[in-house]
Image (tube, rainbow, N blue to C red; front, side):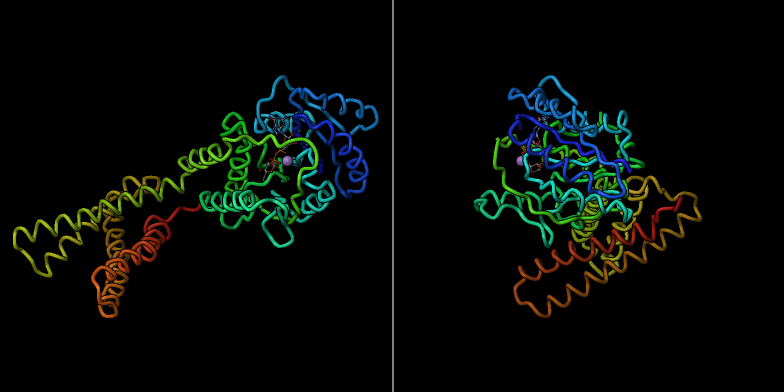
Length: 376
Ligand code: GDD
Ligand code: MN
């Protein structure tokens, strides 16, 4: 396989000659694969590009893509990745920092995972054997760990331990060659979040490889002050387009409408002094009808149930699965009435049970039973 290590630089002169020397030692030792390096420089005023050019005479594997002005890390990678795929015919793209925070000695360990069939290999600071610099202050550590943890869950990818790191290897065929760079959500560091979400949701086989994220010893970090906002923006934009998230949101809205129908009709019947078990049953059934109709035409419109026979059968099934939800509520409600003495706590327990048990139960029933996705 041809692996292209993409190294974006902005004012990394001091790091660059050292890096190229070390890479010249490491690259020939990597078995099975042809590894080349592509520096993507944004006209660094310190003359980083000149350093690279002076080495190009000696090393055939060393490439340089120059740019006009500093446009941000995401733009640099977009440029570099397209070039590596089109002009260098890369099979894998590696993202790598110029400043030794990603130890070049770890490059072969990531590349070795290609042989095990992985599509996406992530250098990970947050699994056993990985780390961030021990001397970092409490605030910086908290920001790094907390930011990563938040992004992990906001992306609904708890299975991936390091989602904000910048040391990664991605397969081109079937993955990066299908990515439309004109849709890249950030020109800055937050581009990483988008590419990660893209790869994982495209079904990449993922492997995390631990590494020690080193401290920078020369030059300065180029990370922008607005990067946190930028990351939030990317996650928000990405997730509002994510079909799974949109579906869950619709499901929640429909459920809330169902609750309003239930509570509203119950209230009406009480005003009309109809109170009895039948009334409770009628208002519950009205809520069930509302849930069925709105989920069918909106939440699951892509699997819409049609035709009187199918509708009748599925509606019957829907009533049965809804009984399950009611049963959970009734059991938890009775138990809390029985065990707790203050109404306040009983209501809290019930609300908690609805969110943690009934909601997931209903969602699972809808997606796995009622509006089950047809296999293509
Ligand atoms: N061409 C180009 N243009 N290169 C850039 C630009 C740019 O606008 N901005 C940064 N770079 C280069 C730097 O020269 C360096 O080689 C690499 O991108 C990483 O930049 P740093 O400034 O060293 O980033 P960092 O150390 O703060 O952030 C690193 O760690 C983060 C996780 O904590 C990066 O690896 C991030 O990707 C990562 O999220
Ligand atoms: Mn750095």
